[in-house]
Amino acid sequence: MSANPNTVAESDFLPFTRPTLDEATIEGVADVLRSGWITSGPKVKEFEARLSDYCGGRPVRAFNSGTCTMEIALRIAGIGAESSTDEVITTPLTWVSTSNIVLDVGAKPVFADIDPVTRNIDLDRVEAAINANTRAIIPVDLSGLPVDRDRLYRIANEPRAQRHRLRVVEDAAQSFGSNWSGNAIGTSGDFVSFSFHANKNITAIEGGCLVLNDEAEAKLAEQYRLQGVVRSGLDGMEVERVGGKYNLTDVAARVGLGQLPHLEEFTHRRRDLARHYFHCFDADLFAEIDCRLPVADFTQSNWHMFQIILPEAHLAARRMKRADVMAALHDRGIGTGVHYPAIHLFALYRRLGWKEGDFPHAEYAGRNTLTLPLFPMMTTMDVERVVDGLQSVLRGA
Image (cartoon, rainbow, N blue to C red; front, side, top):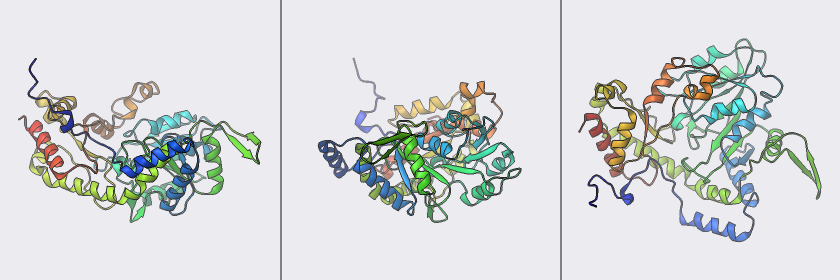
């Protein structure tokens, strides 16, 4: 059988993301495995201390995902615990975990459409959605571009039709290394949730952390992290509340410890690659066909992802859909991703009453967003290859 001339060698395939792990980290993991202490132990404590240093000395607790961190923040805040009328406002354009955790605690997610330029939650719509049942806001820094923190907290601290301050759970899963007005995300605000999943700017393979306001909240987080258990002395044990099994392993923590020193280097490289994307794209072509680029923020964003919004009408005229573009790029040895479909159009959320047309900006982005390769080990030639391939597909070559 002859080889397919369009097949790209596996070694030449460019994925949309790839973690960067140095040999010292790999050897450090081997040391942890040799130590015999591979679940939560001294490396988790060290990782939490380093994360606290990064977050300006705030208490930080590590977990096995950046999903449970948000759920635990809501539980610490008492949301959903006593009243099924509690509402939490969030964006419909993010990974579905952000709204699933609201359902998990027994509260109601309330969606506010996105700003079509930033693709982050529209804070005008957040303000309009607040009512007497609103208890919290979960903003998401999509692709690492920060939501306006100044306005966000003005809204949370002075809500209309409310007598109490709204809690904020910052879904900063994608914005570790980003900043707002020069202050690193995580150094201020209310609860801040980070993810260290394999596709994030720094990774612990899996994992996440929650930045808290004080030691009392940190103690509650520890209880929720491990079955609600409180220990005292050598043999004392009490369970005061229902918790879960959310602890991070020392193996994962050692990976995270190896990644942290490279954060500034990784962020700088991502910004350089993003700049090169903008330099290489044919601006006239994109304007003509309505192919939309992200906000060109090279100061505050960590450029977790480089996402474009494909030209729906242009593709439809050629009887093409996003999947066709992705397949054509794959044939050229270029991997892409979809981040994310609009949450409210998933079957689970349709059953809860949402429907097509509720959030048109999120729906358009959800149908047409395409994540292009961006990770520190890429070269400028890789960027040029992606741009050439994409523009050839859009032109019909």
